[in-house]
Image (cartoon, rainbow over all chains, first blue to last red; front, side, top):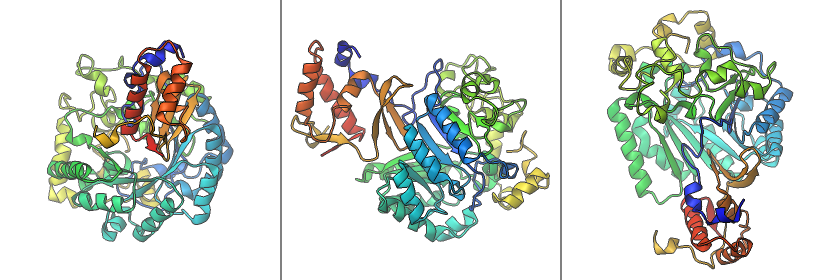
Length: 407
Length: 95
């Protein structure tokens, strides 16, 4: 650094936006690497964003060595925040090795878990290996709803795991997916998090991809419920003297403008899936005529920088009207390509969430459908192997017919 | 900022729990890492943060930086500004 540069205002130059991730359209770097190490999961959550055909990818998972190589290669490209996710990552018995390698490489690593499979022995090994934090999913303050929405009896276990995480000196990072069944308990959920000593809590309103899209009419709350939830959250934030950081992820269906999905296609996020596919976002495989690279046969640097898939929606030259000439296009980059395709059949049109989109009626209709007692009374399709096989075989066609790809 | 949040020269700070400060070659800068986030630091901020050891006071760090960068004007004001920002963002904790 030059001597003069310290004299400049350091405050102005500090970059922190969008969860602290800074992005630039011309100099992309995969700062965030999400390793979806397995799609196997002991929970069967109705809102899971994993692909409904995940059953195809449970027999061809990357080996430990392949994961370690991918971590090394991504680190060279600038990856620094590592999420180890799934499915339930703890179903693999090599997470200890992966964590230790991640630490050696200088990653800030995060295990994203339901808590099922976390034992004293394993958490000690993670601590020794240098895992930086653990993000635990919680579902509700009531045993009834926790067990209903996850289709498992995991309520008591989650409380024990929360204590274990705290006991090992980890920050308590909770993630609660919000939907119709728990949105009325926002205050109680926040109080529970505070009582558990949470440092961070993410209240993630359900986004409709994968299983949650199939169950959209069963999960979606009303606009009034969302507004009330946000009001309670803001009130809690102001009133509470706790150091808990609360993130309220606004549901895009109830916004006028789409989210800047993944902070831009191929800008800062890179996902490697259980079978080694390299993706710019979780659900990119729903897009047609796209060949995503795989770590088994493609160089990761090429995949990020040069592969046609990663370059397809970088920048804004792919945009159609009304996005192309929109004064706000830099704010959201036209939203989510997967959502556009799933709902309209064209990945390059404006995200239908946008009120300027000619397809916006599809969102209004979905909100209406969720209020329709007949539609909302259809059974939830829980995320499990049996249902995934059925969806692959076309046996649940009526539930996915309106979408342009298998969610 | 209320009076008890004012940075005093005698205060000693260290990085907050669960935060990590490191040099990132790929970014050509220092960064602070924490759950769900990362902050890329401007060179000046990096110079301050790398001197934090949980022992040196704010005043001692100011003196060190003044000595290291004698030509920089208004350096003390900038350093205090950085401390205030870092404390308000909870990147630092008082020792």
